[in-house]
View 1: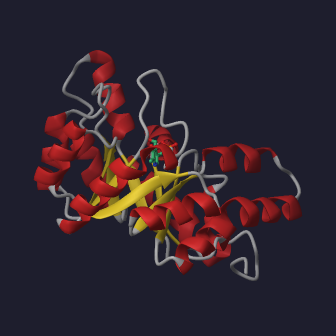
View 2: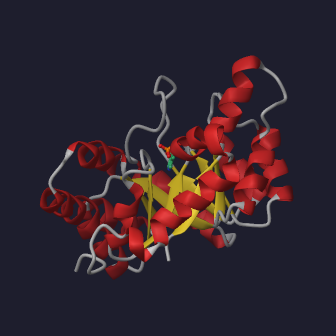
Length: 255
Ligand code: PXP
């Protein structure tokens, strides 16, 4: 089974656009939970462009499913995470000028800081996931850092698969860009999570990735919720990730 983490940042983006108190990302998390979400993801950015500090604490107090707290590896965020003690922390790179997280962590350049943060958070019982490019080299560095999970940045993968028409080319892409990295993660004892750019027409490809454990999806789910409601949008996505009838390969997973 692939767990679905629902990212509710985009609800806060709509709220912040008008400086109002609605729509409330915490209320969104409750509806996501009712729709079958396995966890809730929120990203407290340094510039507080969407999620605010009070949202994070309210989420922790309200939801019954695990909270995945996305953050940059900074002193300020580490202090918040240590107090908050969410189920999981996903460490991501952050640039003020970017529209959204555009790539995986630069592991080599930040090896010392990432190792220290990972160890400190994991010592508190928090699962640490590193947001990385889906490469074997990045997985091996993540193992060196000591993370128990990685989230593969699927943005480039999604752009590519959305443009391919032939099934054999799609299979090759899934194998080369996600499959090999996920197998290596499994060999290193690391959970494989996936996120960024996944939507209703490409998410079911994760069903064929060996050892895929979790997908964190936001934009497509919140976008669809405008038309059909959040509970249904979440239920439909969870179905795409797990229903055997929707597996793009009749024979199951890639070897
Ligand atoms: N995972 C991470 C680490 C992210 O930064 C984001 C974007 O906020 C997501 C998952 C969700 O991406 P999307 O909104 O494209 O589904």
